[in-house]
Image 1 (cartoon, rainbow, N blue to C red):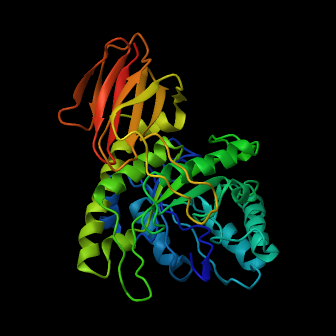
Image 2 (cartoon, rainbow, N blue to C red; image 1 turned 180 degrees about the vertical axis):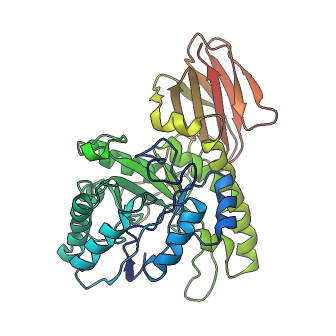
Length: 408
């Protein structure tokens, strides 16, 4: 993302019980909810924790290491380190190993974050990826996972080059920045998941045995044109949609880029929009990390592929699009996409309308033992009656619905 690269080998913050790397997936059980460019004091971080955010990142760690380590101890957060290097220069081995060794002493270190957007077709850049992976495995006694920011235009054939050296595989999902319809969120995340699976890897927490964790990086920033004209910002419905569509499409973690843009934009219009979008991200973060155990179901539940979705009224297809930065044929999906999971005696059904019009869906082949359920986070937890193993639901534009059924 920058011409001066932040390796951010240890700039993630992990909040919560004890605030250690053992808490958060894939090392632990908590659903990963992260923030780029996190800032603030202990009190501000405590406010973030209330909504479920449990780690973060800063680009200035190397210059302010002692301060961040002190904050980590006070706020029970994890801090990673950041090395700044010029793109054309080789990664300094001694300095990098020293930083890894030093930061590995802290139980608050979460993931090793490699130099961003290292291009696999340049040997010197790609060597940095390989080296950080190998050095972290050798000099970190806990062998924490490796992560690297990857640009949003990469297709499966590009992503496959990084799989041997990354444990956390990101999808950069910047809908308005790339001028893509919200249906693109599905393609972007599925492309990452397919790159993992089709190249012989499994999705799961055992990264030391080669399993991978796909995560989505969702948009909270603006990019004015060279004429200082601001593009149309994504609205709150789109923000909430992109969070949940990423989950439906396979993400096992969410990271927002970035908190600093969301809280300090350079125009009043963007401040208002980003405040609304940030509120929607916090709403979704609270839902997936809350008492309904949705995050645990997404991470550890059994995916159910037998439930059928039919669009019976309204918009049946998403807008057609050519994925950002590719020359692929145009793509369109059925308007409503679903993820069904069985977890600890419950059936969870997360459904997302990725069209920007009304759609009505019928969900059928519901397990026979299910008679009623709830639409979570709706008015008074709306009761859902199941008749003939099916039920119907009306979706607003970019609408999201989350259902929970007792299987016993």
